[in-house]
Image 1 (cartoon, rainbow, N blue to C red):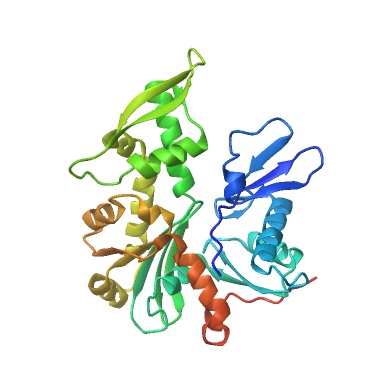
Image 2 (cartoon, rainbow, N blue to C red):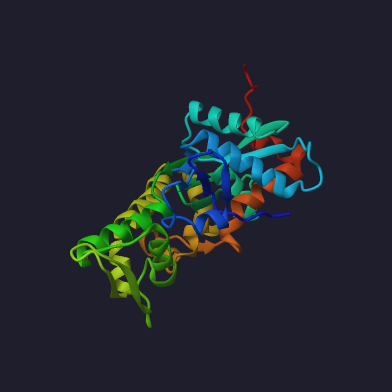
Length: 315
């Protein structure tokens, strides 16, 4: 069973209880009264609010294990490859607090590569670029391990923030997070193409304080996204530069595989192809590649145990 929910939690401030989790909570972002807070417990790929993360995990476990109240699942959690030991410990602790029997950690680029169906255990270079919400992970994988990797905290959330900042600067209009994300998905692109769409964006005028509609083209949004996109492409370049020559030759043959929600941004594959000269492929279902990879780690536990980062839990 695949549960595809955003990591958003809505809390009642007066009682501290969780009102909604996932899609239901995401609809509340920017629309809540004083006594309700909709928050993202994960920021930049790591835990920003420990209690809310634990509650969210509990909720998701309960959704999957409907009839077994005392389910003690084995859990595989994906983390950015740049995670610090302290951040990693917090992730594992949240899993144990939420009721897991054992918590294993796998690095996101490895999970993305497994989920995208790449032959990670073979002696060939596989390059994966996973553009998530909080981090972009770029890694070269061979023989079941990460040879070289780079994790930058520029990803989907920063693309949304760039649109908000650009609208504020260019048009004096304030947008909410959800509207910015909608603009990114409908008008956003990373590379020019013929017949680009235009659209109307609604926000609050910062001078009059009244709602206002602004006409925006795809080229405008691309201009707004330029800085974070440049950082993502730069991370690919830096990783290629650090790749051993043998593996670089493999990547030239096999190409770079794009996964994560950011891979759905129109023209991102063309942009990376244009700037690196490498063939670029988007994974079949990029949005769930990491989740599918983590799922396979649970299902084929014995076979994939070597990719899991293990360190014993100490009290």
